[in-house]
Length: 177
Image (tube, rainbow, N blue to C red; front, top):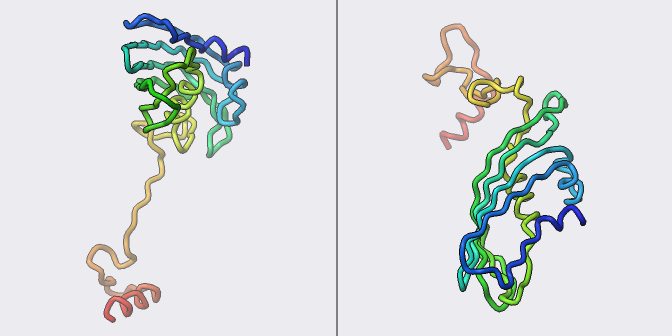
């Protein structure tokens, strides 16, 4: 938990104006989060906190890379990320999450810890399918593409001398009913 205390921001008594914070983090951060998605990585977070009488607006800019395992080849690779996110903390009578980017916090809260927010933004920005750069095609896409077509081609009729797949015949019977 010692690693995560550097993400504490004392908001009680903080003047109502804009404040800037910077955090450098690495493997110890991911280890402290007690998760298995990311174990190695390095990133820098620039945070602009804008405090007013009724709310706190947090603007995050997170840049860095995380070491991932390719789903296809099981090779390790670094996945770069550059994230811009905003979170609004409204001051109220209780703690409550109103949406993905708005939360209510008790107005007597003296300190917030932004580590969990940073971690969630990083995890949400990772690709669903983790592919090594050598396994990606142009524009970061996979080489494989799926093309769906009937065995009879685009006309729906078999060419002269070709036999129609009996499964298609069964489907045609259902369509006529």
